[in-house]
Length: 121
Length: 108
Image (cartoon, rainbow over the protein chains, first blue to last red):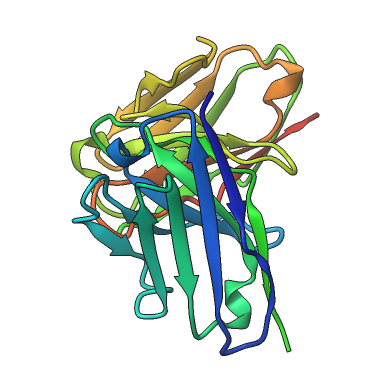
């Protein structure tokens, strides 16, 4: 069955860095676009970024993270990553990785359980 | 940038009643790339509807989506106890791919 498991969250200082990982299993990882979505405590969902499948040829970011966050993938390891630099307090959130549903448009049919990132001094 | 506005913010209904949730876009959503997600406390979101009106795999037929352009609706025909949750619309018509702020469907 499809599984997505995030790791790498924790406490970081403002201006610091963290790297999130998402381990995928149960499907042919390289065939799927993958996305990061976050949710600040008690708030709604925010799309963060996505990366296309096998060649990572298409990458897009929300304006709120552009220039600070980098999404990448290692298809040989069935893993998705989010390198987060220059962290701010407003980056505090649960971060979910999600798989694209492989239909026209970008839809997220499987999600990980989420990992909490807290940015505080 | 397309902004999605959901209404109402909170909807109080009883099991067995019908629910109508609205999602309005500030600009037309190209190709009706509009989805609805359900999220329960402490859980990841679940895809309900994609392409404005197609049900995702395993979603009961009491959930239906409709609309096009800038106005979209999620309808739940007969509320079951497990349907009380927060619902988000999301567009992927053109980046950035925003979510609406959510509608909290609560038990009356």
